[in-house]
Image (tube, rainbow, N blue to C red; front, top):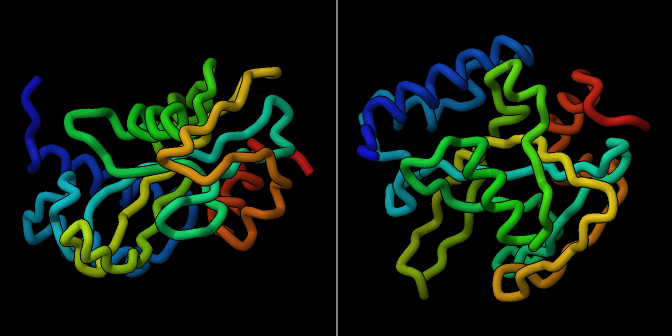
Length: 193
């Protein structure tokens, strides 16, 4: 399958435009991503700076009351599973792949809301510290985020080469990690108090 960077940029821009309208997000909140798209940057490549696309997954339990978080090795904090986009993957499939790789769980599935809407639940651009050992300057991750559902009783087997651990946590912990995403999840009725 051939990959067209221009078509990918156009797809990300359409998602960004529709997502900002759906969730009442100011367009200027993603100025860098929009500028990189307008400049024709290869935002699909992890070697593109000042920023590139990543995907992540908010893994919810069957009842939508708990979230599965991983303790990120490089950043040293609890976050949702995620990582670099790998062309030519579909963005939702990229988020699902990252979720499976980092948690080792079987039976994970993208929430049906995404198929209906065609949108991610959140898009967040955030700064990543420099990693000289990988020849990476400080840069930005344009993280496109999806809701993933876990099956009841699915075993958790985190990849300890990727993460320090994984655990089911209270949904409220998202307030400190991704407050806008939590607001969107609640607005859509995808989580329950």
